[in-house]
Length: 253
Length: 66
Image 1: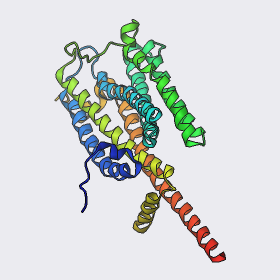
Image 2: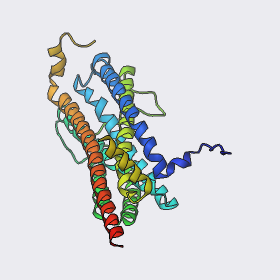
Image 3: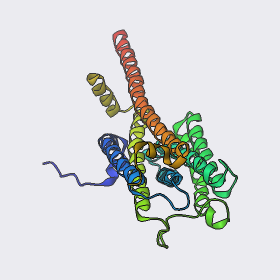
């Protein structure tokens, strides 16, 4: 008699269980990201009013803030997976961390780029060495460092470990970025959204920003799942199940 | 609705360069990332299939020799 399999999330910690699941989920998350982006852009450009102080240029906020949030959040998630990998020695965790890094770096760059373009008309400068900008630039270098380090080391076990240490140490930079506008009195404006205060911006502006942030989340999940699938195949290429996946892919082609 | 016409929309109150420069680069990077991720997958599958075929051939040759 067959014993019914009990459902457990931990089953998916095994690469050969996670691989097909990731493949099934990724397109859905990309579709969600697309729909949310369209809604967010519609709200941001056609519903949200012109800003009383900044005029139209403030509309950069709908891409700038979500990108900045994502760049910090992705780094923390990366550090989380690194910690899980170090503590429990699970293979998939390190792969997740490495799959997240390029997308985090992309969002970090977008945050800096859009910030520069927003800064020129509002502050009169593309770049200043203010605390938030500097710590955000450091975050970009931490991402690049993580990617370079994990790719430069041949032995995957050692690469995982080195990457984990870098991401855990680098995670200390994230609260510095986040609180920099409070700790130092600088050029960068304070947080527009706070958990303790009522939002200081118009509701439609806030909504379009939040919808864009959700879209960025869904996009990150989709791209990370696709990237981790390639990593899993590479790392597990000596196993029976990857052989089967490759044969099946060969028949389809 | 804040815009009287499309040209008014595209000019963004004179800030077109800053607004569209931000969105343009962001979406271009996202498109590039998607292409790279999908290309990498194809590349990995192709490379591993080659390795697998080579390994199978070596195994077959060994069997003939024995």
